[in-house]
Length: 341
Ligand SMILES: Cc1ncc(C[n+]2csc(CCOP(=O)(O)OP(=O)(O)O)c2C)c(N)n1
Ligand SMILES: [Mg+2]
Image (tube, rainbow, N blue to C red):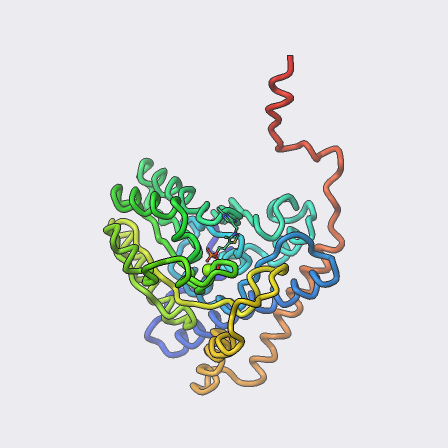
């Protein structure tokens, strides 16, 4: 796989120019997700995108920062809130937008939609709609790597809601017991749909609970992309060194409702506003501006470039063909048909 296929920005070095370029690339990575999803909202309102759609807005630092710790050979498993993980991994905006439109040029041939983005060429194994469902898949990928002596990491993103699922606890136990090369990234945005974490878990310190399984675990400021990157690099290095699964609790927040169907009446508006003050995109932009690393012109140029990229993705998705009706049963296994005499 060529190194140019993912937008990973390279290791920061002590040279100030390189370090500043790296920070700018992180800003670009987060801003791409933000602007892509804002466009998705418009397209959804115009009924050009249909079905379930969950936005990542507010949580962009996690995808952008963690991606820096991964190589092209590593694997990524995600949830239904995965547009950001897919974009950070390097799945082209065009392939994702076509998937949102249900077109055959989409990364899942238009059959998955927003919740099931998939790109095996980038080792991006979904897009999984079942809460906690990605965890055993990730453990399986990591176990396969161990059994075939491949030196790779599998990174699994999941939400705080997964702590209420047996799949999390079974995966954590076996991964720790078998020392699997897993990077477990819990996106703790404090809510599972309309249920606050403190309303369904007795112990809300998720890193502490993960540590109880015998793995290295700690909590990270998930609104600070530089902190996320540093933690992810440290954890991935621990995994690569044979230290078994590592768990990062990313303390983050979604700025939008759970999904397009959620009226978001269970959260205090002041709570939302307080978290918005810690906006990961604008927070980094402010730091770069203050350090003299981002001029107004450079910000405008970046916005223009991203808008052009997303415009092109929408245009291509619009013009792409629908899957021909005669192909509808392709890739579908039919036990009914098989059992007929
Ligand atoms: C096994 C299962 N139970 C219930 C649901 C319905 N459901 C969809 S999203 C969700 C909340 C999950 O919250 P969390 O894991 O914190 O992720 P977030 O949406 O906050 O990113 C639930 C309960 C589901 N998809 N799968
Ligand atoms: Mg959550």
